[in-house]
Length: 341
Image (cartoon, rainbow, N blue to C red; front, top):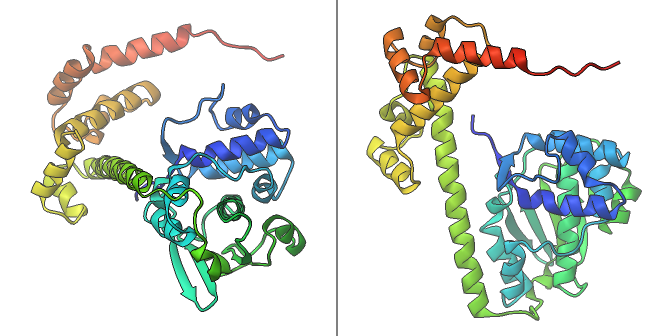
């Protein structure tokens, strides 16, 4: 049910790569409804990745657009996880620090490091449903970053991709510098384990503590927004069945209602305010964009009586539902139309 999200930091390097490849990023942003370089403030639904990469493929005229743009990615992107690497004593220590905070980049990432003799495997927790351009670009970005962090000593041995169909073996090798195994059970990057002991030229314990403290705060904020989003989604589901209470939502989240109330308070919101906000937005949407009878809207917004709905709506908006719908339709009728010859 929960809508997975990615941080906008994942989009910025791709936009840089588009520009470096000779493609105007505005063509892509406009295609996905973000004109004038307007990126989301923080996180955006992972479902938008499909539309974003389709737009990239069309703009670049490349069916393997993730691989194509990986070749134009800069080594460093100014990400907090990169600073965790740089300030750690060794490459391996930096990798382990960064793996604790991969969710800052995407809900799909749950990285882990496996060691087997002279081979190390970085496992990325994406599922097989990810649009292939995203993990293919991400693998290229990781190899470039790791090579830069180790002064070129990082040696990729194999890239494992879950999707069954992709580019040619030659093209993968050109970008990654190693073989690729398709239809693998996981997304993973295999490399020489010896590089984990590579000292960092920028190691700074005091900076590492500062970067890790900042990473913890950012992760806490992601988790705060995640809880609020989950509660909003459950309110929408439960209202259909006649109402949404704190106790019902807490039961769905498998936590005591008191704990849920406390966590929402820590997130700076109240449960009743979330219910009111959802009811108000849903009522306005149904009044403006559907022909549903008021009685149906009363039921769908979780009210037991039309009179209660009327009073609440008047309190929210300052006018009755009938007045709001009439004015909305009048404004729509007055809007100028554009004719296309």
